[in-house]
Image 1 (tube, rainbow, N blue to C red):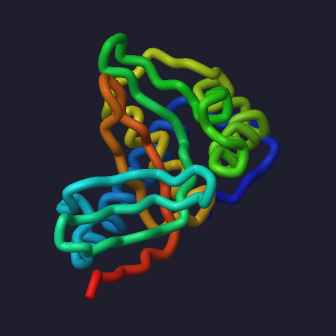
Image 2 (tube, rainbow, N blue to C red):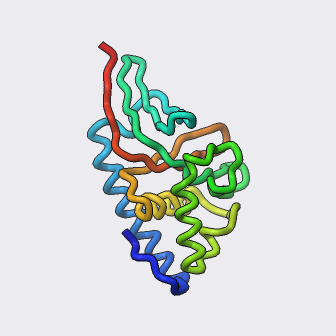
Length: 162
């Protein structure tokens, strides 16, 4: 966990932090491949329940509590923070708000600006920062038309239809 303080963060230190978070997230996500992260046929977010659901045609499911961090548009290469997206229910953007608060506390404009010019790699870094700051077990990038939804998730429960 990053120790918050009230000082401003230099751009170099922030870039280094993002790289560290991305490496940490890659290790976490690699560990999740043991249950099949990245290999399921479908994914869905049930906003009413707050779950990320992966499923296969054979009835296998992996379900985890989810937080939506933001979305990356492939149309214009922009990132939109979930905290400013009205299509996301409030309970699912609490971790995005925590990242915004961290940005306010440390003077990091990238974390407090609603929409940013971005790359997909930068979007992964922002999701990785959220995963670290909020103690998530992993992150997922789900396609949604011309965009990708970046989410973090908690403990995964596996089940199979009998």
